[in-house]
Image (cartoon, rainbow, N blue to C red; front, side, top):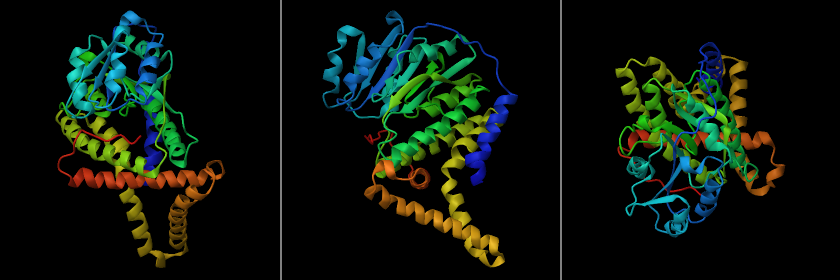
Amino acid sequence: MIFYVYFGYLILSILLGALFKIRRVKQEYYPRVSLIIPCYNEEKVIREKLDNILSLDYPKDKLQILIASESNDATNDIVRGYADRNINLYEYKERRGKTVILYDTVPQADGEILVFSDANVLLKNDCIRKITANFYDRSVGAVTGLLTISNAKASSISWGESNYRGYETILRKANGKSGRVLNPDGAIFAIRKELYSPITPQRGDDFELVAKILLNNKYSVIEPEAVSYENASITPGAEINRKIRMVSWFLKSSMILIKEMALKSRLDLIFQILSHKILRWFSPYFFMALFISNCLITDKGTLYRLILFIQIIFYLTAVSSFYLNKTMEKNKIPALLKLINYFLIFNYGFLAGTIKGVFVRRNSPVWEKVR
C-alpha cells in the first residue's frame, strides 16, 4: 500500500495518461476574466499583490479584479487606494471563511472565466494569458497553474514542500494528459463561471470545485507555463497545522463527493479520489501497521529482522533531524536528512488531520493563516 500510494499510483497515472490522452485545441484566447482574491488581514502583502496584478499583460478591458475581504486590519484601506485602477473591493464585516466570501462574491463577477488566486501569491506576467489559452477548447472546464516555492532554501520544511510540489506537478501533468487533474493548486487555478457549483456555500475550495467539474464531464488540465510564486511555511508547527486543517476539511468533502460519484456511477473518479487523496492521507496508518507487524515476525528469519532494523534507523534519523535543523547551518544539512524530516512532519500532519476529520463532527471553514 505504501509503494502504491507514493509510486504505484504515479506510474499508473503516467501509463493511463499515455493510453487515454485527450485531443484538445490550445491557442491564444482572450475571454472576459474575473480574477478573485480572498483576503483576511493581508496588509503586509496586499500592496505587492495589487501591483503585481496591474502589471499583467492581459488586456485591461477584459480583466475584472475583485478583492473579497473580511479583514479588520489596514488591508481594505490599502485596496481602496487602488479604486481608480479597476480594483473592486467587496467588504464582509463578519469572519466566515474563504469559501463563504467567495460564494458571496462570485455573483458579482462578470467574466466568462473565474481565476482564483491567494493574496500572498505573485503571478508571472503572462500567467492569465497562458491559462485562458486552454479555455479555447470548450471541453476544458478547469485549469490549474504551476506554483513555485520562492523560499525553498529557507528551511528543511520549505525545501521539502518545494520537492513535494515538484512530485505533485509530475502527477498533475500525467493526469492532465487525460484531462483529469483532480488536485488543482489553490494558489492559482481557473474554472468556467457556468461550472461554478460548490458542494455548499461552506465547501467550495479548489479540490471540491474541480471534482464537481469532472463529475460534469468536463476536462481539468494543468498549464505549466502559468507560473506563480509563493513562500512556503518554514517551521514544523506551521506546516503541521496546515496539513491538519487541509486533511480534516477535505476528508469530509471527499466522502460527500464519493457519494455523488457513486450515484452517477463514476467509478473511475472514485478510484482516482481514493488513490490520490484518501490513501495518501491514511498512509501513516500503513507505516504503523508495517512496523507493528514487522515486530511480531522477527523470529521468522533474518530478512524480517533486517527490515525492522532499517525502519528503526529511519525513525531515529527522522527524530534526530529535528535537532540537527536547530543546530546546523541550513546549507550544511544533508538533502536526505531534509527529506526524512519533511516526510515525518508530512505524515504526522496527515495522521492528526484524519483523526480530526473523523472525530470532530463539524469543522469550521474559518482557518487561521500559518504565515
